[in-house]
Image (cartoon, rainbow, N blue to C red; front, side, top):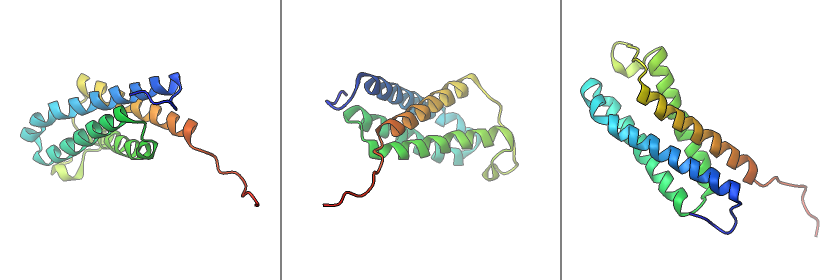
Length: 137
């Protein structure tokens, strides 16, 4: 998991991101059967998010893959947003716009996702090259 270009702090941050994505993925997979009984359409969302989070974590274990960091941010922010909407105004495809309750496992999952987003944004900020003025040759 450690590349020559990684500084120790970037290596630690990437490890935190990987663990956070894997934890969130495992929780999404674990909660899928419960949502199958409640709202079957949720299962598709849970499986897509869980699979993508696990795949991104595996890619990040093998190499930093900074080109995928924005994808991971978008996926994770999407998951957080859908969760917030489901707990506040309800989701349109649930039929009756019911508000789901907040469970402790939800907070662990969303906390892990928030940690992943912060880590990804910090990595994007510290590793994105700034374009300078054009060089005349």
